[in-house]
Length: 360
Length: 130
Image 1 (cartoon, chains in turn orange, yellow):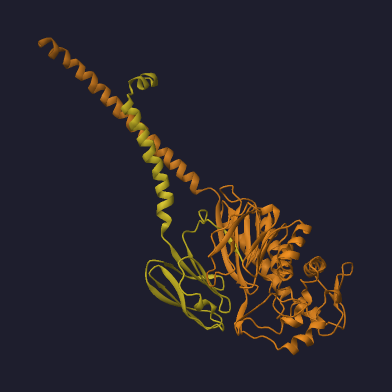
Image 2 (tube, each protein chain N blue to C red):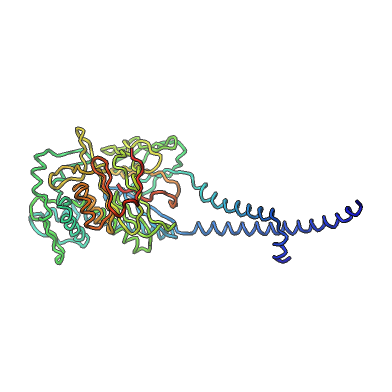
């Protein structure tokens, strides 16, 4: 008994010594971990971030996103991109007296007009799309589209449409690339770039972001979106396609597509419309009838260039799903068509890649 | 005391404690990054310039002056709506209450957005087409 108590004493002393040493080490560990946590946290907070600005330009909601590790650099690039869109708005505005477009329209049937490279590029692409959509996309729809007012809910009488319809024909729009001129053959003809200018502006705004040192971003002009590069988490941009029959709910998404260095545009009968006597009058007019096209609810086209995606989305919408799907396949674009019954058709390339939420 | 003798003297309990310490400190990062920026806010812009940045959880009514006139915005029970607008078609008013997303009044250049944080990396959808 005595022996044991004698032995116990020094043992306790050793334990005490160990305890102090351990405590010191734990403290050291704690400090090291605190430093590590602080280091990790400061690393994450200084990495690339997503910066976004929104504004109403081109008579619609425009949102520009840039990925950068510097807020100042991102904001400078975004401002420059907005400036570019505003510059293009001035050239392409259908209603402005001073726009370059208006000069061509005013001189319809009179003389050819000298045009800028931007207008030349847009018109050239417009004619290409007309030829490839069985003339269902046609920028010379102007005399008919001017009869409708989707803000004031005004629809024209049948006689007015019949009177203006002979003026709609893309073959009467003559562009000369060498001289950089445009000419409308018949007096009273009007070009309306509503179905193509926003896609072109998205391309140019994206170019502007890149010129300002941004390697990844997103330009969204209403339904016309251009995505480039990858997000900070190295994933492609996630673009939601709106459910065409989600009245009033702008963020009701039917499916999500992943995009990088691609453009997507959607034409839908729910974007600008009014209901008159139970009938939906929307802004996507058929150049052949002068009335809103009724074959689809919404069409989304994915292409390399925003200008193509925008114009083909309009053309395919008017064509309907059967002919429209053939056009998309011929052009090598991906796309999604919702027909007038709400049935969804997709091209081979995105079949299986898009997941559909349950639609009610 | 050398590192070897420290390692020799560590028991299983020590190791568990160490693992716990690592876990607690790492969860701190998650806690700071995920939970703190939750405060949702309502941003009201006119012509691209922010006029109000308001907390979503405080009920109030504000009015802003756009090119067409005065737009009145109401925040109540974590929802936002436009109650008065000088625009012609009143699409912004017809949109009703929103809990997320945006209300855009193009004629009066008013944009009301509900956002979570300045850094939008955690958003599920980056943009919506249509």
